[in-house]
Length: 92
Image 1 (cartoon, rainbow, N blue to C red):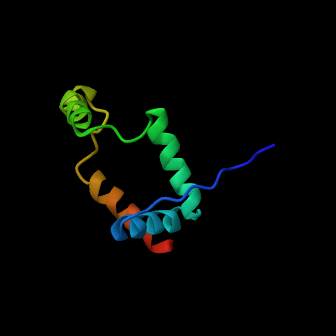
Image 2: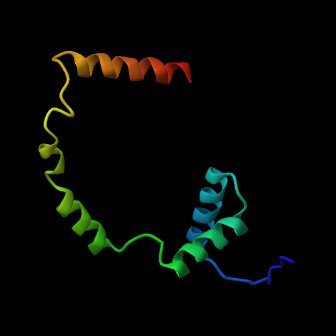
């Protein structure tokens, strides 16, 4: 049997608006979003701290330069690619 315990919390105006916007964008209720955020925070899978993010960026710097010709395109390949993306965006 699944049950929940009701809990009241106080949010500032900005927090409340941000929760409302985020829940609406995801198509879920505010309560469900708050439960998800609490679960990720308690499990340690929430957003990493700034120092960890900066360290990951620094460690990845230059990684693509070792990829060889993986990203190479002919001279007008980029233009054709961008045109294709623009056409696809217009059809949506």
